[in-house]
Length: 164
Image 1: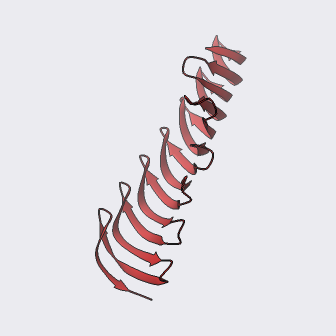
Image 2: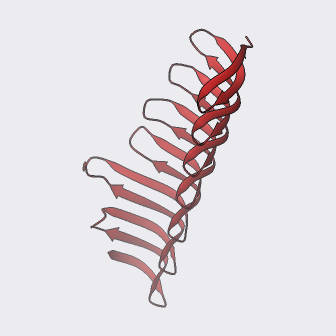
């Protein structure tokens, strides 16, 4: 590792820049007792030299914690809350294909209340459990302009009725 920045008691402490050539990452931001802590930006160079993944936001004990934005690639990113470097809490994910989810997350999965909108105009608003539509929800078919309300179980609609 190569570090340029502030030190306290022989530890990275305060603002600094850390380069790790082996794991191909670069961090610029705040440190506390040798750990990424506070606000910072982590850039990871992927195998394809033209591809980078990066995170800008809050850190605690070397983990993404608090509010931040994770850029997965040029067209996919997540903006919201993190706990222990995982999407947890409220957040919005923009997927590479143009779909979007906004709602609750737990342990990197859509979990709780959320809204999922597809690029073709379909939308589901309701409950999620471990990344699946699960519980009460409404599904709007954009092309047919029809709204259904019902119960979902593991991404499958079990009972529904047309609302409009």
